[in-house]
Length: 119
Length: 93
Image (cartoon, rainbow over the protein chains, first blue to last red):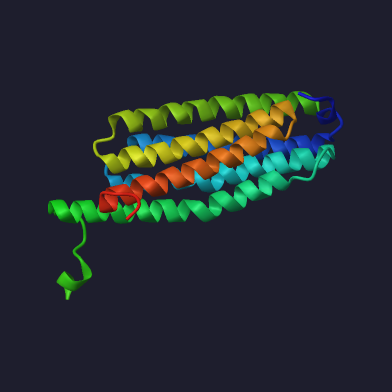
């Protein structure tokens, strides 16, 4: 812990701590959901809590701390937030499509039919 | 006072993220199919990235945030490659 964190005011520390604890607690809830939910398509929703509120809360707390300390411009956190928000829907969509493809190839009954079969 | 508050908040956040990483590892070991394991690996990458953000707040230096950016990028590329491999059987066609 460096010395420039001593200089930040108490209200900024309180707000940043609330954001940090909120982000960490909600990412823990997302991980609990990932461990406990039953099917794969239910489990696909749980880590989005980690990537949306977990990353958002931690990044927001870090931005508040470093902006209040005045030590540097919070540029890395902005990049990190934008990158995670952009990449998470891509990965989860590709994973869901791969899972649907595998389930259909195995003839698993609880996935929806393909579009040309439903007509 | 504010230093103590931030220190306590980052400690508690890091403990919660360690618990989240253990749960992701549990799902990655147990997961009945390959897509469960890939999903748990992606969540584990994001949790490691958040762990490094908390560590960067505690240490006050910039280098841990750059490490977090690299980890986020590697997690994205590896998850996309693994999902493509599940879908098509090969990564580069």
